[in-house]
Length: 242
Length: 296
Ligand SMILES: Nc1ncnc2c1ncn2[C@@H]1O[C@H](COP(=O)(O)OP(=O)(O)OP(=O)(O)O)[C@@H](O)[C@H]1O
Ligand SMILES: [Mg+2]
Image (cartoon, rainbow over all chains, first blue to last red; front, side):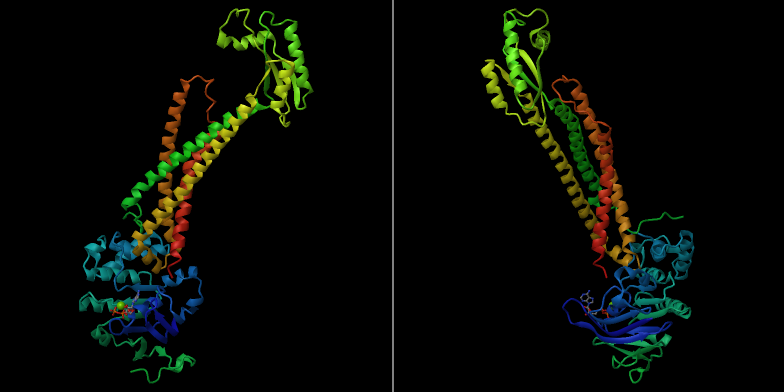
């Protein structure tokens, strides 16, 4: 699903934010991504949702070497990835419904199907009454739920969420996490960046921990971190797992 | 059913409301320049036709006996010399009555005073390809018939034709410059639109929109203002041309070259708004696709 090989990332001429990341996410896995603020969680997610190119190393998504993929062949990959952005990135001139419908529209889905589907999902995240509201009139928690709905509407193969529960109460947060679990059950690979320790302990999923630009894995049944880049990734999960 | 709103609300920003007006002004200029170029074309054709072999030689007339021996001698001498000149195809004097008729508009109908020498006009047709030295010919004519003069309206007309062609060239240059200005305006407007919708474009890109999908919104928008501005400019140009035509009706036709537009010209004018829409669309598309290449 996702494979990083000695990936490094620096912005401009700055220091390397990420250094020598080598890991693999198997299809259907579910991980939390943690680390102090500024550790590079968002940067790592950006590399995965193809918003940034690595400064070095190799990234493979859905079995394709991204570095060798032509630019115009990337959109289909992006459509298989659902992203909850840390800053939501909703379009203010569109209603909640239209915002959520965007990925389907871009993929060329039929309109009637879109509307029914989208209203249902919005009702599910507790926004039945705000279907026609515009983002500026929504609370941060409501915006976040719209953003989440937009990320999952297209049933992505890979769901990347950057602090998806940062602005909502625990009950809503748990509800959202359960939604992610449901998607995970039907095959979606999930990575959730969060600072929320209680969520992590509640869901007991493996944790990708970023610190000093390096990645360590804790309780990691489905993630493999290479100690030596030349070795076989599949048998390198010794010692590093907590 | 909720109306299908555009992800990129391009019509909104203030600068864009002026774009159709600017495009309209440019189309107006281009249409007038084009109309002028076409109108001159007919005139130039007329002039060129009359240039073909046109040359007259004027001999002093004989006052008391305009059709007598003396007049005949002058005509024979001049025609003889002319026919010997290489490049001259034919030469013959106009009958006295005809020369008289030519002067009628200036001197009035009826009997001319008998002591007025009516000049003798010799019509000469020349080979258009031949290079005749008119100065030399004029001197030799003067020797055989003192007072003979070549009316070099051919030279004058050929200068007029050259001038008209130059004016036509200027007209085309104006059209070209207007087109270049139109392209710049569209590039500017498209870039401004992309800047003010940068976040939206980035989001569309990240959730898998192809460059074409994003560009299409800009192209549609460019089509609308290119066409709107184009029609506005064309309408103003047609009104202007109609007003000019009306004003020209009052002027003596002999003083004005025939400045009318034929069907080709009208078709060309109708093509101007289509061209402006096409230029806007293509420019917008190229501009957007180029800018999008910077996204990963
Ligand atoms: N576009 C950018 N240009 C330059 N530096 C950047 C850019 N984006 C991030 N950085 C730097 O990279 C480092 C990692 O940033 P990142 O946003 O990935 O951290 P994070 O782990 O997501 O933090 P947080 O928990 O606060 O969201 C930071 O030091 C940040 O300043
Ligand atoms: Mg972050």
